[in-house]
Length: 104
Length: 146
Image 1 (cartoon, chains in turn cyan, orange):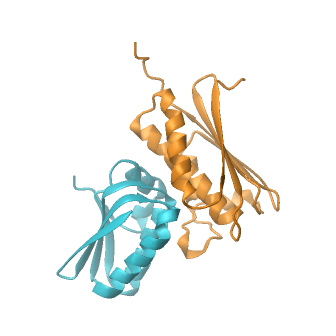
Image 2 (cartoon, rainbow over the protein chains, first blue to last red):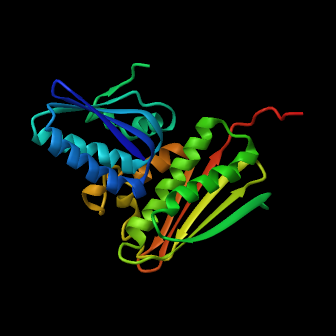
Image 3 (tube, each protein chain N blue to C red):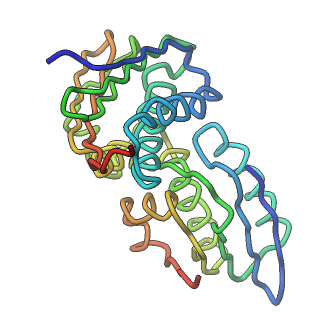
């Protein structure tokens, strides 16, 4: 999987693309940790429009980002999930912990 | 009931095989003419079951995973994922949402997702001997193409 970033006015957007499973999750979590340390964002948006596949390992990555942002006094949310990743988000009930914004 | 068609795949519990297993399952299921959503559900359930073997059954070693897919006579797809790893002490507890022994890298959602994406889920396990997960999914019968 790949992660691209955009940073503006304290908001870090993480654009996830490809497949996020257990095999990919460890390196993704490490990279996201580095990005959060580097940018120290106030808000973090996780854009899933480019994600083709995600399983519960992706949910664990989201929970990890959520904990980090909470420690930093910031907010996190998910944007534009579609297809299979959206069904996994729905089944997991993650929206009780992290808001999910569907805008397209 | 005799199975109409089946495949059996054996592979070592290396995490790079997670993508292989779910892609192979999707390719086998394609003969049932599933919808895109059904393909996604099958890939998700296989990914969860295989990941459980890699993370929980063989935490400190590479072991054998055996995946079998069968098409049952009524067109249902049966997916069986077996390991010969450490087994589960308490299956009922392991299947509860958010329960995990996998630390903060895991979310404890694997069985919850398998259960919600499949029609039937059965887990048999014996500590020290291994675990077998059997899932069945009825695929929507669509009109056959001529």
